[in-house]
Image 1 (cartoon, helix red, strand yellow):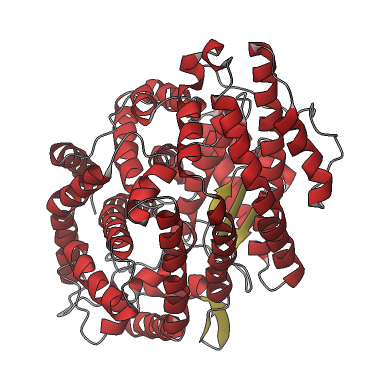
Image 2 (cartoon, rainbow, N blue to C red):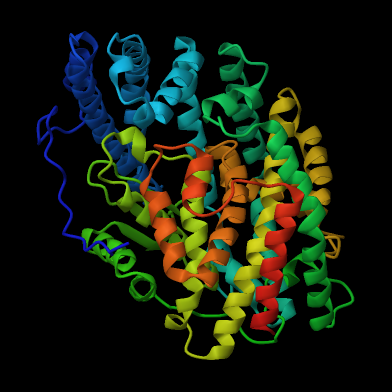
Length: 576
């Protein structure tokens, strides 16, 4: 595959809406929805033109919403930014929803639908039919309330700070002390972070209880037994089901957890500890200080661009252009909501990367992860319909997690000496395996939560501990830290903001290991397959996309063992 040379991004010319149109009121927007609603469609060509116009409207509105969300997260203390986001959620989206359902029906009921290329639109049309199936007018105000309530998690979390060495800092920054070689320093930081989180346990429990109730009501309104069964339809999980998730849980418990227990035993012995405590899990066992791959956000982006260019010039150019466009906000600061994401911008085509970097090694991993998402966005920016660019997480996370592993061959950009580079690679591969049990824990927990929607906080805590113990370390000593363990789940923003979006990380992590294995055997072929798969967007099924990438969409125990064995072999090659 030839590397694409990128040009300075310009927004494609609008055809349906005016070039200078901005979302300021529903009144101005409504006429475009009315046009699509009332337009007479007299041929296959007119149907496709109608679809393209609808797609343009979707892209403009998605991008407008994206910028409101991004700006609000960058500064949660600015009430104007929160109001601007809430305006869209409360005043625009509820009015759009009935039109969207009408448009879906208009499309599937059109007499010209059968004349369209059925292979080209297969995935798109099954999504449309699913949306019609679950749409209920009475759920519109609930969705509005849910979206508003979900943002409260970020507001609560962004205000969590602790004081260490006389300096007030975010919990993200404070977590760097968990890598300190001085055990008493690690314990101090851990306990300060723990106490700050525990201070908001009740507040976050109350918020979660409310969200669970709202989500369950949406499911009941749509005629489903509960939010679990509703979610598998609403998320378009056509290519796997609940039983597959349960198989994933069992495979991880059987094949990955024992490996991680062995890692923890090695850690305990290397640190010469009688008891491995929660504040001992991040420090480097070689007795060396934390890895420092960069200092500033600017340095992080410049080094990542160099790293990506070495893999393929096109990959680096994607980030270079985003940097020049101002589509990066990387450093942690007070008032900035936690987390990191790559937010697609469907009209301009180049996404926005948001992070809370503090100079840690994990920030490097987050950056290459989000960079993988960004490349995915750019590769799909010219697809015909906005819906083609909105891919499922099982594919989106495959793009990002694969880039974490592929980029390792060029991490010497970040590390001057071979010893640090070895440490970084080893830590990354251990984290790759550690991701899988945590994903299984969060997913199984969500199944319990929504299968038992009328539970109380105490019952939920009991269930969490039982599930956590199935996948958590058998070596770490939690005595004295039971309250922290009981509320670990509250750190996972996905539970609050994007329910059931987590198992995808597990499926994609297995896929990423398989892509990396191909890359180690034949780099250029693997990169071609990677690009080909990502370029499909969401025009093919999950199985077809994974097959294009040269891998299987599979999570049975034998396959999980095969991939885990490969990672163990690579760890042996790296050495200590």
